[in-house]
Image (cartoon, rainbow, N blue to C red; front, side, top):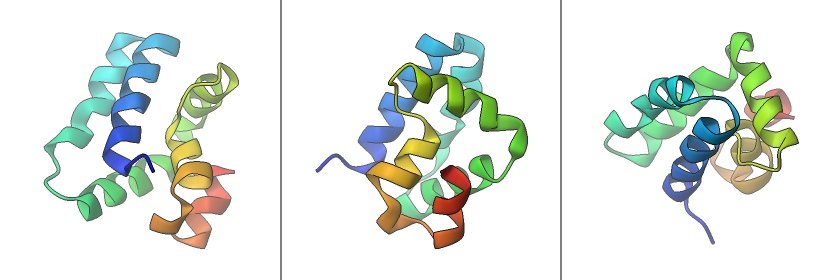
Length: 88
C-alpha cells in the first residue's frame, strides 16, 4: 500500500505538472512537518480552504493525484468523515 508520504510526493509532482511549478513550491511546505499527524493536519487545512478546490479538480481531471483524491480515495482511513465529504 502506498503511504501518505509517497502520495504527497506524487501530488507535489502532479501539481507542478498540471498546475505550475509555483503552486508546487507553495505545496512543498508539507515537507517541513516531521510526522504523519502533522502532514494530515496540513492536508486538512488545505482541503478546507475553498480557494484551493480548483487545483484539486484540475489535477484529478488529468488523472493525477490531488490532495482530495488522497483524502477521499487513497487514505480516507487517516481523515475525518467531514474531510472525506469535503474532498469528494
